[in-house]
Image 1 (cartoon, rainbow, N blue to C red):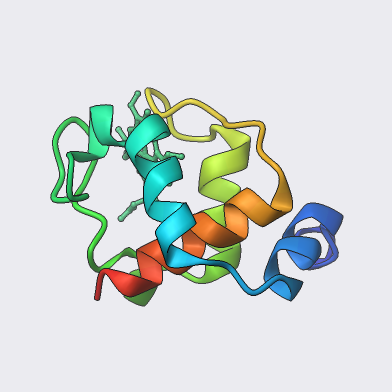
Image 2 (cartoon, helix red, strand yellow):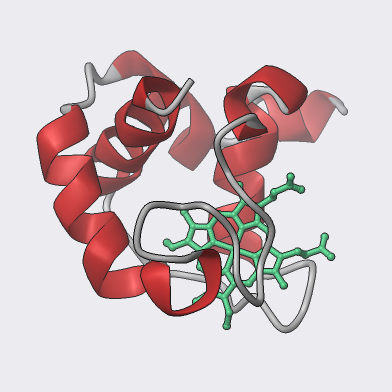
Length: 92
Ligand code: HEC
């Protein structure tokens, strides 16, 4: 877990104050096809509890690494990732 904790993308993302509104826009463009228009779940799981069940680091990893096909990996800026996280935190 050492290298995971020192991941520069993750630490940069966590240092940014994300904006949920911008995150919801990014979510509509990239994620609703699988997670549903209001993140209620579709092909992918309901994400309303995601920030309670997973650490922010795990969620970032989930989005940028593509470890769990069919969910693809996303190449995004830390700011966009922080916005997406803020959106997901706003869901619960
Ligand atoms: C092609 C379909 C697809 C797209 C697009 C997609 N996902 Fe997923 N996502 C999945 C699937 C399927 C899973 C479940 C993977 C597994 O079995 O662990 C998942 C799991 C997740 C999880 C973990 C949830 C949990 O409770 O385990 C998070 C968080 C997540 N996705 C966020 C996102 C975000 C944010 C986006 C947009 C940037 C996105 N996903 C786009 C299909 C998708």
